[in-house]
Amino acid sequence: MKLEDLSKQELIQEIMRLRKRKNNKRISIKTKKRDIVDYWSKIKDECLLSVDWSEAETRCWRCGYQKRLQRCHIIPDSLGGKDTPSNLVLLCERCHIDAPNIEDKDFMWDWIIANKTPFYDTYFTKKALKEYEFIYNKKFQDELIERDILSQRDYDIFLNLKIGRSTNHFAHPWKNDATEAGILKMRIDAFDVKYKNRPKKSKLYREKEKNFEKLVWDLCDVAKEYNFNIWEGRTRNPFSIVLSGFIRRECFLKISIKLSNNEYLCCFTNEDNPNNIQVKDYNINLGADRKGVVEFVRNQADNFCKENGKPKMQEYVFTINPIFHLREEK
Image 1: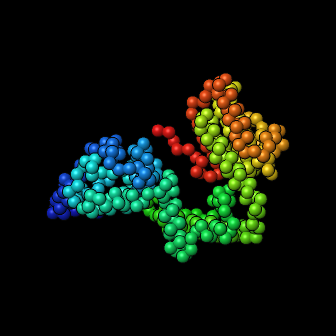
Image 2 (image 1 turned 60 degrees about the vertical axis):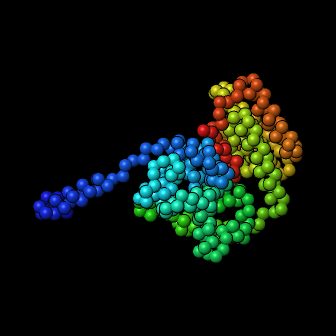
Image 3 (image 1 turned 30 degrees about the vertical axis):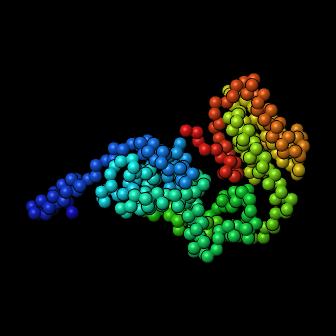
């Protein structure tokens, strides 16, 4: 109803309601996020949390995701809680909504610690897995094992299957646990349709996967040391990886390694993405010793940096297994 349609008495009541609402408006919190971090970092061990103190201004203390953080009261403002560092923690919007609202100074920390997760950006995935198990009385991991989805390489293919659409509830900037569990179910159904009669991978193939994953781990360490970039090949050039160091357009080193059967092949290339490299381009045989391959690559990177200087920073790490992805330097 428009204001001009109200009677005099109704208009007075509406003005009083709006005035009361304005008077009850909460005063914004003045305490800075840095002050909150500084206070709690001296009291709480970061090993108990989902976040390192060095990143506690940008990552949620409960879920560990890098998001815009809100100052959350331990004892709620409505129950007399103060806007002091000792009564505030930093949470993302989603976790702030879930946070306890009780007059107890210890329970908030019990709740945060109980929700600890060891890896960044995995908390809500774990919640979706628990929701899936609750719905179907079966662990999602068991569903994958039954379908011979055992490695990160298998899981990467699984995640890239075309499935039905999903959306968020109105006014929610995230998908809830049930939606995420439903997405997992759609992926299982899509896999069963596309790979219904797919034979299981051989023991030799699984050994090859393990050996190459160890190589990737070692080469990620080399790349981090010399600020080189990493790009692992996928379906178009499996079991391949490129390390690239860039100083300027005419000054760079790009070296690719490929595991073919039980031997490691190598080539120097202009490509960042190993998926654009053909098998015939690998013209150097480095043998079967993984440690020898790592030492070869390290020597190439070391010589390049001694001659041209070290790249200023590592710009990207693209690997099939996200555990290799490096955290951003603050």
